[in-house]
Amino acid sequence: MMTAVLTIALKEIKDNFRNRWFLFIGIMLTCLSLLITFAGSAVSGELRVADLPLLMASLSSMCVYILPLIAILLSYDSFIGEEESGTLLLLLSYPVTRLQIILGKLLGHLWVLSCTISLAFLLTAFLVLLSTSFPLISVAVAFTHLILSSILLTLCFVLLGYIVSLLVVEKAKAIAVLLFMWVLIVLVYDLVLLALMVADLQGISNSVFQVLIIINPSDLFRAIISGVVNEQVSSSKMFSITQLPTAILYSGLLLWLAVLLLMSQQIFSRKRL
Image (cartoon, rainbow, N blue to C red; front, side, top):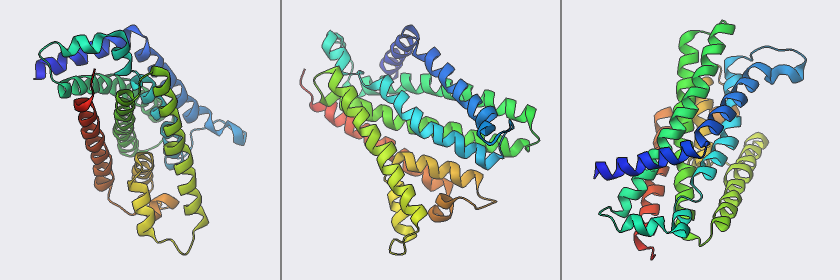
């Protein structure tokens, strides 16, 4: 089983190298991360690295919008593209199961995204340590959580891309549906939730806010970063409301991955080609 999965994953990695996705994602993430870190304070009339909680909040805000878009662009044609070209039918003629195909593609995308995200944020963390007096352990912990939660967030949207790619009949419809879902999940839902938190409505308890955060992967990502960098200062509104252990927030993202993987496997197993 593993040989087939690794073979499909290797093909996915080669395709991403051939299409320059690896290079494009790496350069874009690195440039955005460095600009936010070292030029983000330019609007206040000075150039300096912000305090660590504020810096991580800025980087997480960038990630929560950019990373899902990257995942969508990588995955929207994973199945419908191969179906249109006929390679998916050819692949299924070999002794390989549909679950192995999904796992192989997911493993390939995991490798590409993990490498690009890790390189971008590790370079940023190294330069932050060189240019500031932030404690090494604080920077290491903050950026480790940023990298891990970023990878899990992107995998959620990669699997969402697989599901849509299996359900539609054209690549154009796949990208249109996924962009609409990105607007709803990342922009609309996130802004409405943040507005409710800031409004501090008396009729909504913290437990309701916690449920609203858990049912959206992008808000789980925000809550993880907010909890990690604000444990000592406790100044974040989201942190004060969430009050959930980081392990539970990570478990929420892993549960999202398991549910989306199961859904994509079920849809693929029933799909007629």
